[in-house]
Image (cartoon, rainbow, N blue to C red; front, top):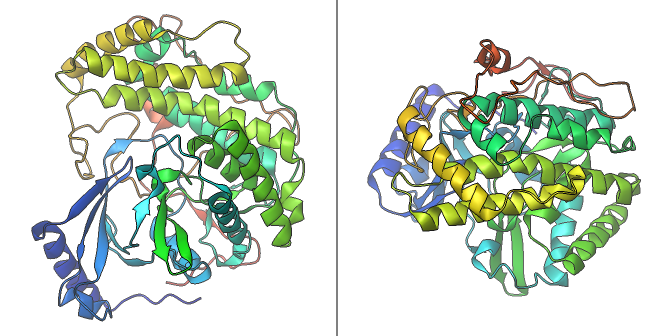
Length: 455
């Protein structure tokens, strides 16, 4: 599939009219963790420049949000969509990527998240989602964007999980100790919990790598009525990775909130779909290795769940705000307790609420406030350790030393001060050691492709 660089004059015109449209027209706005999506008709002449039949065609004017960095990303979403939209029906195309924001085709329908969370999804929908995962396994690796340097080799499942663990431990937890360290300590979230979990798990079985979505939850699944019934479409591909397919399955079954029966059904249908797609090797050691990925998902989720609950508190937070945030945090801590092997109960809601109240008072006096839907800026309010000014910018995942090839994963430990409960003394060079480079990492080709990439 060849991609041609647009003529500079055409690019300038599309950017000009798209920018005017986004700034002046009224429309629906959907805000998520990573992007603000302004949904409105293209209008003319933008529709003409994009080759659309009508200016009434709706599109998503997608603006990355300034946000705390809690998820790894290696590609721009537009890079992935060029490949996926050509291979999978109904995946919305990226109509134009302007660098700091982008324009996407709009999929009519409603997200699954608008349905009651306790309503069973049903066999037909779970089977269709399993089929979508199987389609990802058919996307040729050589068509995907180039990978960062030193990415784990195809099939190195242990190295892949090792890389994810290093990101969670260093780039999410330790990188944010300056702002959240005292809160983590008050909640009993000690340094090194990711490594502690992985050290208890057996070595993973090697599985071929495929394209992963990594964020298939109810808000990212659109239900569109059809003459035959309905169709499910996957949105938001900015967190896509190339790696072990069991990671994709684990994040899916956790974030969908399945009950125990539907979780087992989802796993069985996923495995059946992979076999019918001619990829039975992807189901090797399914039960023990999926258990590892599920436990990892619960453990690493503690960091973003705590930080997001704290950051969601309004400036004038009341008892109901602290109580709601405390319940969210306690739920995350309880889910991680079994994977960590902790016999003791985690912080109770009253303890969590008190810790949040103390953190919030200190944070208001220390950190500038950023509105929840503020667009990304290079050096705007809210930037600081752990913050990503462009949520769609590939940030890379730093390499993490392995104990031994194929052995138990033991993440490298960074010394952390013992007196966390008070004002956290962060090592002077912590920010520099964990700083994300301004330049993108050197890229290396996927197996079977040259180092050069078509424009």
